[in-house]
Length: 187
Image (cartoon, rainbow, N blue to C red; front, side, top):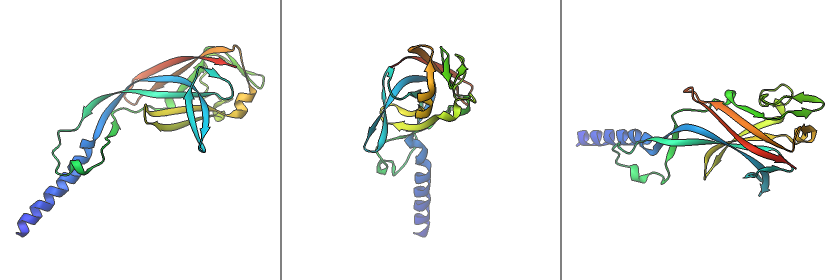
């Protein structure tokens, strides 16, 4: 009888530890989307709503385009049906935040300093400390990086044109490179 309980306990432990991975979908990042947005304050929280016109703030939403490359449903488990009803996800590749580039197709002026088009604003000594990147989960899209320009920066920026194109470029840890662009209007 003791042997039976030992075997049962071992099977339960194997079942518990062996099934964790079966509740994850493996995703591969295959591209990114860049969308201009505006901040909407609701219930004490910032919500970011896509727009094509910047009026009071400058925000970009960078969304990962992914595809499911594996679903681990083949693992046998005695207690799988006792778990949560939603599956987690694992990234089989990751975006490298130090590779992020955000640049415009037209120059901008900040405090009488001209920042040329194609200069990476996220690394520019003049401007990088005035831009925040927020990593946020969005139920409909997955994980987003929200790029927010500080209000002081917005007040001191002058744009060459009222319309311009913004570009976002990044790399993954498996050496894939992605770029996306969006048209923006300043009012």
